[in-house]
Structure formats: C-alpha cells, structure tokens
Length: 116
Image (cartoon, rainbow, N blue to C red):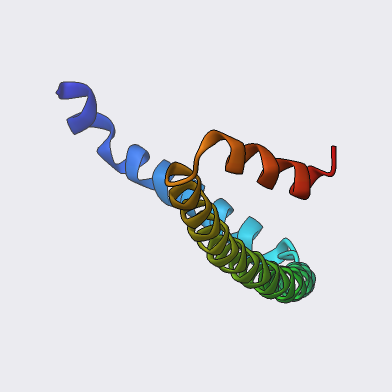
C-alpha cells in the first residue's frame, strides 16, 4: 500500500500517457471501409435467396405434376375396383348357376365355352 501512496502521481500519469497513446493511434490509423465488404456480402445473400426462390418454384412445379399423376393413379384404382366388383358379381352368378346344374350340364357348358 505504501508503494501506491508514494507513487500514485506517477501511476496516474502512466495510465493517462497510455490512454493518450491509444487515442492517438486510433485517431491517426485509417479504419478499413467495411461498407464495400458488407455490400458484397449482402449481394451474395440476395443472389442465394433468389436461387432458393427459383428452386422452390421448381419444387412446387414438380409437386404439382406428382399430384396430377397421383390423381390419375387414384382414378385408375377406382376403375379397377369397379371392374373387379363387376367381375366378382359375374363369377358369383356363374357359381350359383353351376351349383344348380348337373354334372353333364356343367361338362357341356365347359365344352361350349372352351371348345374342346
């Protein structure tokens, strides 16, 4: 503590001197113009955003075409289901008809159908 009491004026002068040197250096050293760098970075970001927007539009177009394809496939599935029920009904009727027939009538109907 005695050291600080004895040399406090010199310590304050040293600190003020360092502060003065720092301020002089900061004042006379040119500061880099960062505005050009920031402009360049902003332009790059804008370009990237525009690319992303274009990609998004392309993806939306492909999604739309896939949705159309899915709708066509759904329609085909519905048609196939309808045909399947029609065919099932037809064969169900044939089955009922065959159950009421005798063996000779069944053989003759197969002969007529398959021509053997």
